[in-house]
Amino acid sequence: MPAIVKLQLSLEVLAEAISSLDLTEKRQLQELIEQQIFEAEEALYEDDAETFSEIQAVRAEYRDGESMTIDEYLAKRSHQG
Image (cartoon, rainbow, N blue to C red; front, side, top):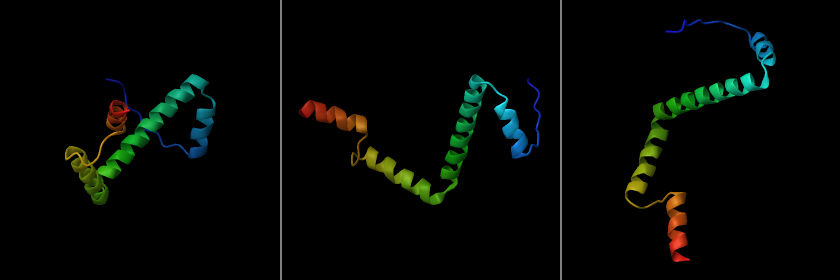
């Protein structure tokens, strides 16, 4: 198991460390940050009662055939044309 190290850095020190990375490392860091942002936002949405209710309502619309995905729409459209 890899060792876990927690650091407290100022944003300025972190920015300096990032600037020293090469392009490949910066892209890897970007992917990591984007994934963590996505996960954090998803957790917020799941915790928000209003958003949760909206998601449930949309899922019910799809289930009941009241809405369709873009792929379903395009497939239906191509069969009609």
